[in-house]
Length: 172
Image (cartoon, rainbow, N blue to C red; front, side):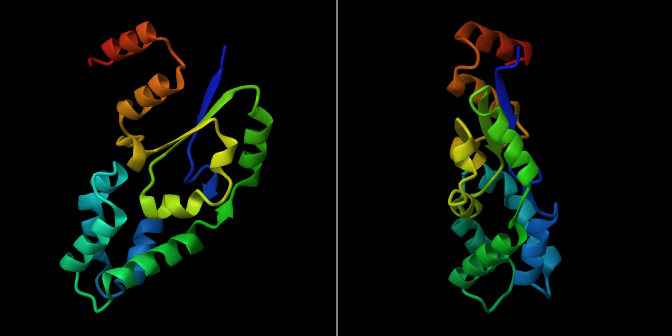
């Protein structure tokens, strides 16, 4: 019997283009977007897992790609562009979540960074879930089995025996 349901934020609850990061970087670096995007790709695992902050990323970006903008200006511009690009909420999914709430334990698992999370945490979306798992706080990307075993462990969705069996089946 299903007792737990995991939702994603970006592309499920939030409607935004899959190119949102590239679009933000193109605004920030209109003459060198490819170079800025490369810095993102080289850094995305560390920023998504919380090993570095978005401010650390802005510093690395400024060091790697020439701009007259200060780190603070880059940070502000990133935030503004993200807010513009991530405005749309899929209210059909929100209605579904509200219907499921109380009948199932609901979790949010999202690959996010602190600058996006600071905005999204003010929108009331997280309140719909029993627990939110945000990659930069948990230290795991949703592209890792560790993110899902982390949910199972922290939520108590499986007992310790089942958890150890699960890990054994995945060669851990």
